[in-house]
Amino acid sequence: MSQQITGIGASAGIAIAKAFKLEDPVLEVEKKTIEDPKQEIERFTDAIAKSKKELEAIKVHAEKELGEDKAAIFAAHLLVLEDPELIDNVKSKINEEMVNAESALDDVTGMFITMFENMDNDYMKERAADIRDVRKRVLAHLLNVTFSSPSMITEEVIIIAKDLTPSDTAQLNRNYVKGFATDIGGRTSHSAIMARSMEIPAVVGTKKITEEIENGTIVIIDGIDGSVLIDPTSSELDEYRKKLDKHIEQKQEWAKLVGEPSKTKDGQRVELAANIGTPKDLEGVLNNGAEAIGLYRTEFLYMNRDQLPTEDEQFEAYKEVLEKMEGKPVVIRTLDIGGDKELPYLDLPDELNPFLGYRAIRLCLDEQTIFRTQLRALLRASAFGNLKVMFPMIATLDEFRQAKKILNEERQKLVAENIRVSDSIQVGMMVEIPAAAVMADQFAKEVDFFSIGTNDLIQYTMAADRMNEQVSYLYQPYNPAILSLVKNVIDAAHRNGKWAGMCGEMAGDETAIPLLLGLGLDEFSMSATSILPARSQLLHLDKAEVAAKLEEVLQLDSSQQVMEYVRNHFFQ
Ligand code: PEP
Ligand code: MG
Image (cartoon, rainbow, N blue to C red; front, side):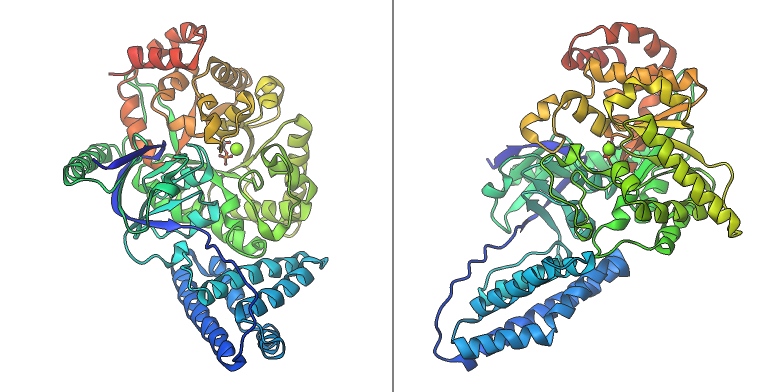
């Protein structure tokens, strides 16, 4: 029997491959006196050459896989490696102080890092991060420690890591990375969301996977039930290969629904839309028959680079999505940075509770240059398709009004410049803060639409961090408290003649779908891979019948009871 570890199934599918541990190397620098500085300098030069070769390969690879802008960070690292001031300083230190290369490098880079960090300019501060990265790479060569980088993977693997940051995930090459398993995280952490949009199986929140697995061991991950099998036996391998075949077969069945409308057994139409993080996700969206984009998370445009994207860069990305969707609705959300999505080059202050802190619309209303640049890009792109603009993390009406006012100001400026802007852009908001869900009626008078962000709405309503697996039992989409907030939002929208969608992960969840249908949700936006299973499920649901039972469901007193009710009444 193999060893089995259970976590949270974060992206459906089965993967079988070698483990590739992605970990920060332990680099302990010890200061030593040396006898032969010439030899030590050679060691240093050799480590620099190896690092350079490695970085050049990563850069070429990243340019191909992720595009020039995201590869720019590696070009910056190469510049650090070639900086004569840094190299000469290390060499002189070795020569003059007769110390080993590791400690000379550590001292010199340390000095540069402090110098850059103390500068007033954000761009210069960011150089400190580049030097830190380069120091790590060169030290790893000097100390003979393996340094693993997701963008260097060139064979089929399953990544095993404590956590994957959104920027790690963005560097993964889907041809080689067959899946991943992490110690921390939950179904709605961003690495899980990215895994679903990249269609790679993932298990998160295993608590201890990195302790249990050696590099190179064969592992199976089952992203459907959340299990990881380490060093499987041949009969387990057979069993999972069969399961994988069955999964593929089911996908072929679903594929028949690609061009079909989304409707229920009693002929009621709803819209099944997709969530995307980058224009690269569009292929999956179109292959999975999405009728719209219900959420474009623009923050990924701002990641894995060392400065803000320009207005033109953003315009091109938004235009590409709008054009490729050929007039179908595209909801683009303005920058939602903060929480677990960091932008190191913005140099934001560390916070005790980043999910409750300076993020999303709060930051945009404060840093208006960033916000206005994005809005201009969006407005210019609106001429190329059916754009709907959405503001994230709205807590008060005043925030919505301010954001909308700034949008209108930018529109007027563009019109004055004779730049074409669509005059039918809907402006809506995410409902992901309980205060907004409770006050939905007042908001509904001013917005064009709502999109319920349950990933955050649940964490704030239940006061349970969506990233923390210790409290993941409180992450309860079917809790009657959540259902009643969702109902309030949908009812308020309809009373005011507006539409209500949902772009949190709950929208694609098979247990939640009957409930949301019964509550009258108009648009369900989900990971592309959930669309066809959802369309197939809807064909078997009678909307009128489900709606009639909802009164009873809302009276139940736990998430567990709701789940059982749905399984007993609405599952085939
Ligand atoms: C949400 O909070 O439900 C949501 C869709 O936004 P994000 O997951 O990007 O926070
Ligand atoms: Mg959110």
